[in-house]
Image (cartoon, rainbow, N blue to C red):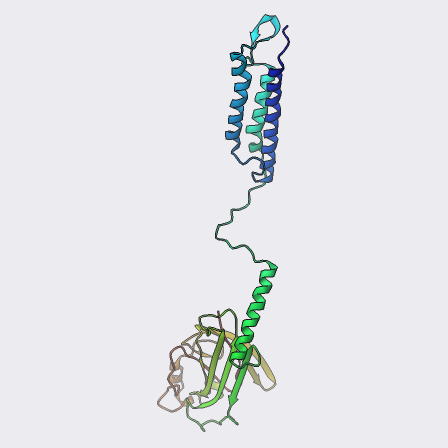
Length: 301
C-alpha cells in the first residue's frame, strides 16, 4: 500500500478543525443572542470556506496527479466516500446547521435611532444646578422672597349680607412663582402670576353656596385650585383642576347661572338674576360661601 501523502492528511485535518471551530463559534453566537464572533451569515461564510477546502482536497491532487492507493489496488482520491471525507462533511454540518437549530436567548429589542440615551448623573446634576440658578434670577427680577408667594389683601372686615351689591370687590390675592424651564403660560424667565379678585356673589345666604365669587385671571389653559374649609370646629382641604373660561362651584363642578331661577328669592338683585359682573376671556369663576377660602393656585403643565 502506497504511503498516504501528508498533504491529504493536512487538508482532511484542516477541514475537521476549521469546521468544528466554525461550529463552536456559531454556537457561541447563538447562545449569546448576538453575532460577536462571526458577523457574516454562517451559510455564506461556511459555503465559501467549504469550496476552498474542496479545491485543495480534490482539484489540486488531480491536477498534480497525486494518487492515494487503498486496498485491492484501487486508485482513488477524496472524491470517493471515505471516513475522512465523512468527518469533514460532519464538521460542516455542525458549523452550518446545528448551532442555528438550537434555542438560544432572544435578541434584545432594537433601539430606535432617535431614542435619546439616559442622562448621566453628572448631566442631571448640571441641569438641576442650572435650573436652580435660573429660578434664583427670576426671584430676584420679580422681588420674590420665596419661590412661590401667596399675598392676600383683604378688606378690614367682610361685609354683612346686603351691605354691598353683587360684583363689588372685597379682597385681592396674588399668587406668584418662578419655575424652570419656562412654559407657554409663563414669562420668558419662568415667572408665573395668577390674580384672584374676590367679589360679592349673587347668593343672599350661605345655603346658596354663592355669597362670594373668586374671579381668577391667569395665562393658564388649566388651573389647579386648592380650597380650605372651616366651620364649627370642622376643617378640610381639597383641590381640583378647572379649564380657563369656566364657572364652577367650590368643588369644581360646573355652576349654571340658571340655578338662580329655581329660587329667585335667594338671590339678588331680585328680578335681575345675574352674577353681578361680566367675565373676561379666559377667566375662571368659583362660586363659594364664607366657609371656604382659597389656599393655593397653580398652572397645570
